[in-house]
Length: 272
Image: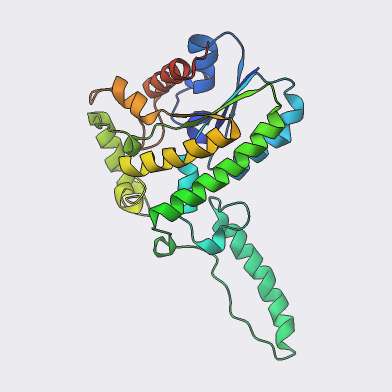
């Protein structure tokens, strides 16, 4: 049994059907020697990805191989302000959590005021102005959390399981020319976004240089744990052209994109 895990790209967001997700393409076409199970997730940080595996480990039996295709979510939530990071990293939609916690604190404060004690309300929702912009801090935070959770993956999987961490191919982490169809989709996404144009919101992390620095940090940590590391961004960039339409947004693939990534993944990792 083999697993592909990670974020929404591993899950298959952008695919037209289950048959064109990475897990299905690996099993049916590019690495069919043993079954592949899909342990992808949507909007999870590294802690949540590991927790999903932990909760269902008892149903899996012996695992030959785990491929974790991830990376972008970790740096996105690493940009969240320090007060949202906690012990296990910030997570998407955590504003609702902090809002409810503040409501409970406010109820307790009402009783405390009877005795003359006062306390101001804490922030609950972060804004773009609250985001951490220092790229070295973001990389350090994202890599530390990822590597800490990889240690859990390694211990939970067992000594005979081969684990590979793969930095997911993303348009702005590779030297990639947008296809005409992609430009139209990206422009439409920008018009619909409540936060503003993607290139402005994520300008600090959406560069090849950021991706390379992030990959270097992850690679060093994976080597220390005996986990294989691969950055697929330069590999995918070498096999596509400006006419190849493979993304539905800056992060997720269409069916053709899933096929390219599945093929490159199998070839690069030596999967069969």
